[in-house]
Amino acid sequence: MKHIQLYENFEMKPSAKPEIDFDKIDNVELDGIDTSDAPDFADAYIVSCDIDGRPATEEELDIINANGEFVYDQVVDQMY
Image (cartoon, one colour):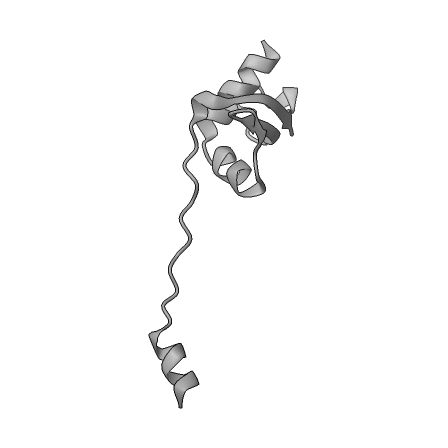
């Protein structure tokens, strides 16, 4: 019966998403830029980047790519 008690007291806590300091992002590599889609660039996304000097994780890239304004700014910076 002890193993049942363990599972009854077990709580699943949602994992906290890492906080991203967008000012510390550099070395951004983009993909999905379609110049015929200008000025929207809706399919563009960040493939890799560094955050504070270290490579971003996949989870961090997902969070960064969810910020459409940041991605768009990176595209515009690279294109123009």
